[in-house]
Length: 336
Image 1 (tube, rainbow, N blue to C red):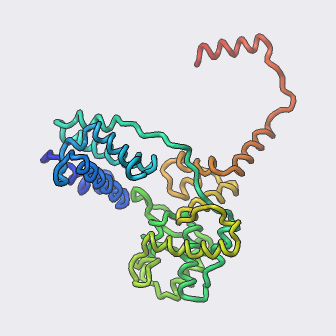
Image 2 (cartoon, helix red, strand yellow):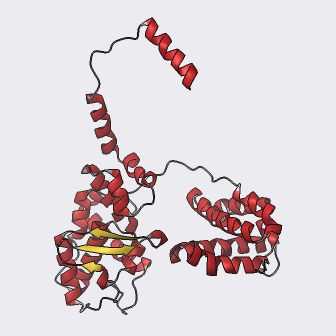
Image 3 (cartoon, helix red, strand yellow):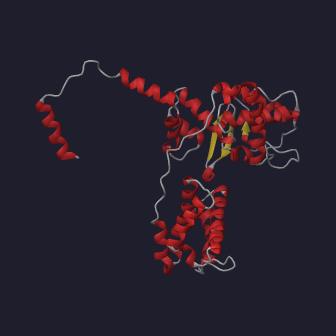
């Protein structure tokens, strides 16, 4: 392999990420954006000339300066900063194995620690707020039934917006029980159950809009092109505005975006007593640790857990004897 830095980056994006690592197109785009930003920063700081990629860009001090630049100059959040670092670490790991002459430089990047941020919470709305939102599109019009199908499926399936955008008509199974098959992060495929009511809404929508080809996108714009994230956000914002005019207290101060419907579905499942393991699989998370944020963000769930724990406490508390205290101390010294 030609181990010049440009060739390493080219093989990283064209061969390693899609074929060996099996990363999704969205992840590859995110990694690509990281390199575009790094080159932009390097040009600004005169680390390279005319956007030419050199090994100097990957020296530890320059990478640390780049991460600081992301936060202070571009206003990126800590999670975004850490995502950019993860992309550079992935490349550094690949480059270390394929360009041993630069191993020390790339190993120093791998050693950079992620930055800790404030505790993350999620925005979500109540079941009543979702009901209000879904009552607003007029199912008797072509546009209304399309919007209702989109918003109802987004909430019902808990899908990421990109998963809904990529969905084809053939991905929906209308036989009992109805399901939708989606491809999530890392190209992981999962089958999600949907209710008969939402299934009937989709049937009405696809029938009215003459969607029957299994390869056809489930949702398109007025020009019959694939729906975009901005398009989904526009539709959601339209009905969010109507919902606030009808009952502003239900929506509250939540900044609505398509992911809020996914968060809301997860919260409502949790409030209904569904185990976090099942919610993890439903949402397509790789780890239950990611899913645990919903339990941490919901005060009602916390209250129920505390009440359940309190109900198990024996009202008659017995004090330790001196011997029991000493035995406990001895055990701690030997085992901790």
